[in-house]
Structure formats: structure tokens, C-alpha cells
Amino acid sequence: MDSIKFEVHWYRRVFHTFGSSFLVYYIIPDTGWSGILKRLIPTLIILFVSILEYLRITGKISSNYFFGLRVYEEKRVGSYLFFGVAVFILLLFFPQQIAVPCILCACFTDPIMGETRQRYGGKNACIAGFFVSMFFFIATWYRADIWIRLLVSIVGGTSAVIGEAKKNRWIDDDFMVQILPAVFILILWRMIGLTGLEMLPSPMIHPI
Amino acid sequence: MREENRYLTGKSIVNRQGIRTELCFLPLLIFLPFAVSIILLWSWYYRGFSMGCSDYDGELMLALIILIGNIVFDIPFVKSLVRSIHRK
Image (cartoon, rainbow over all chains, first blue to last red; front, side, top):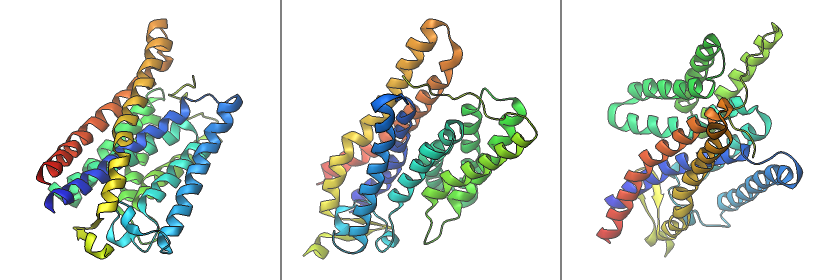
């Protein structure tokens, strides 16, 4: 029983890091059939998972088939759907420069914070989460001016930690950790844009 | 009958059917991130590094983040899985 408990814990962590695979979206060309498919496939996946989740909550499919589901998720939408919807929104509706670090935050900051919280407590988890998220923003915005990089990494890091730490029954932290920094940086980008400055660096990933 | 199969561990629900689902997803969970990071590395090397173009350096950075991040969490996961299989 202890071994399975351990396995569930790591399974949830690996499910998070697996999410980084979705960045393959940006490698797929935007033109022709591949351009249509790259938008259609994520939409169909989200639709399929939403239907599956609806059937699970209404009891038509047993929750027993869903490995690693948390006890409180039995009667509400599972965190994996929140994670998927947030990735979907970021990929389709946000610029790549904003979406990439936010997805990385969900994939790596969340499990790192979880591990740190278990071993060293909540306060240290927030500190670790802040610096890890900051690193993702600094790394992905490496082409931007230094002051923009600092500003974006502080705003992104802070909002990612707030998003991870503040969860409630209706909105999961897997959603907030991605969307909150994305919305804040989007607002920042628009506001700085009003002054005539272009804040966004060039995209990191180029379609093949 | 199902309730007998199912028990709670900590905060998560574990059951036999669920473990089967997990085993089905296992290859995808482990190998897909590696495949993506290899594609990014390939793209950086052939389109960027070998052409002397620095536009693709971001792809190298992302490939390394994905690769290292996944290795860090895959190792304890695979270890725990092997341990649980041996205990059965």
C-alpha cells in the first residue's frame, strides 16, 4: 500500500512534466493542412476529455478508471482538465512569448513547489516556486531588454506562485498557475504598448 | 465489489482499474517529452547552429529545460514503479 501511495504521488508529478510536450504545437507549420490540424486536434482533445469528465462526474463512468484522482476531485472537475483547458487557451489565444513560460510554470514550478512544500514547508515552497518561475521567464524572454526581462520575470514569478498557492473548489491551481501570469503579462504588454514600446521579443520556437 | 478494489491513500484514490490506465499511459508520459526535446535540439542544430544562425538558440534552451525537467521527475517515478512491481 505504501509503495502505491508513493507511485501516485510521483505519477501526478510526471503528469505535470509531461505537459511540456504540448510545446510541440509551435513546431508544426501554420499553413495548409497542418495549420488546420494543429488547431483542430487540441480542440477535439479538450472536447473529448470534457465529455469524459462529464460522464465521470455524473456517474456514467466509474472514477475507479481515473488513476491518481484526488478525493476532493471525485465530485468535481479533475485537475487534469483544468490543466488541459489552460494549455489550450494559452496555445490558441496568447502570443507564444507569453504562453511558453506560463506552460513551463505549470509543468515544472507546480511539481517543484509540491515537493518543496512536502519537505520544507509552505513558505519555502513559495520562495522556490518564485525563483523557478522567474528563471523560466528570464530564459524565454532572453531576447528582450534587461529591464523588460526583470519586470516580466517578477510579475510572472509572483503571479505564478499566487496562482499555485490560491486554489478553491471551482478553479484548480493547475489552471491558475498558467492563466494568472499570462493575463498579467498580457495587460503589461498592452499597457507598455500604449507608450509606443514593443515589449514582446521575437518568438523562441519556429515552425518547421 | 468495486469498493473492495478501491482504497484511499493519502489524498489520492487508487484502484486496480486505475493502475491499468496508468500503465497504458506510461510510455507516452515518459517518452513524448524526450521526443519533443529531441525535435527541438534537431531544429536548433540543423537550422540554427550549423547555419551560424542564433535565431534558434531559444529552441536549444527549451529543449534542455524539457529534457532536464523530465529526467529529474522521471527517475523517482520509475524507481517507485519498479519498487512497487517488485513488492507485488
